[in-house]
View (cartoon, rainbow, N blue to C red):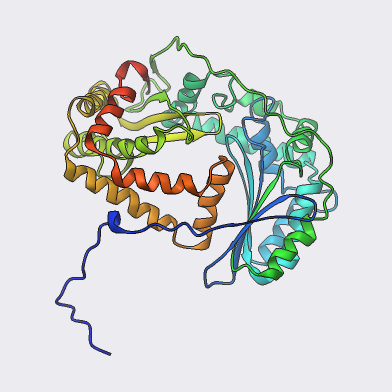
Length: 430
């Protein structure tokens, strides 16, 4: 074998030159009709299993219910205590997580392939017989209230709460936020009701990835394909109106009279992944404030020294979305920092992005995408995002094509449409 000449640098390839290939996912049904998606890959004997229910904030009847239900899901069943459940899972070195988001609640199991036969019955018991014991709820309420009281002293936490309320309305599922009285008012009966209505087997989707073969697929079918999916109506899909007129566009909140740090949130509503402008906006937003080399970082962090970090993010949800700029700065530079954000917006509206800068951003985005396709769990999560948003692989490839081909002129037109300062809500919390 010829020896590597380390005096010669390896050839550098732009991510723009790569062909992108999203490994296909297999689409099956269990014996009872439950949708079952799986893919096999990787060299380690590991698997990820996800059970996805429409049991997020969108479905909850009032604030705090969905999060509490998800948090207490594995804290007791008809025959097992929370300690017994956690001990059984930890015995195998496995991880069982419940992530309650805006639109879904995702129960995820990460385990060695060989341990699935013993772990799946435990998960099945949790998903079919969760009991929500009073003592577990009391402990959850106590801990949640303590954490909330501590968090409310922090300007960034308060800013995150308030900006969603301003964007959507405080009574909207995406705009509601935790309050002490809401947590303290929780009771086991309403958690059981939410669990029964929204953790329905007629609504679930199951995803399996990792070192997957016929044995593992049959285990999923054996344990979950025999469940009676019932004839219950689908979980609540009632629409929630979002206020179109914001009474407060520029809001200043004093959370700590002696505080020296200010949390800034500048936000506007923005369409979700189904809108044709979304993939283009991913590029514009990345250039603007979506990565370490962005314009906001270069100006407000590197040049002005106002902050350690500033970010702009797109927040797509099933029933809407937002674009949010966030940072924390010294109280004395609060207003200058806000003005610099608007200056960067105006610059994008009035001047075309230099080609060199655009190529850098494209390579960053496409390089990150290549990383997201490295490994079965990452690919499974990519597919899960697509399928839960009623999208397919064509959407993935269309996005890649957009990332590669978009021009400076297209970005300028986009900025003129979505970076008008008057369309943004401005919030600062000290």
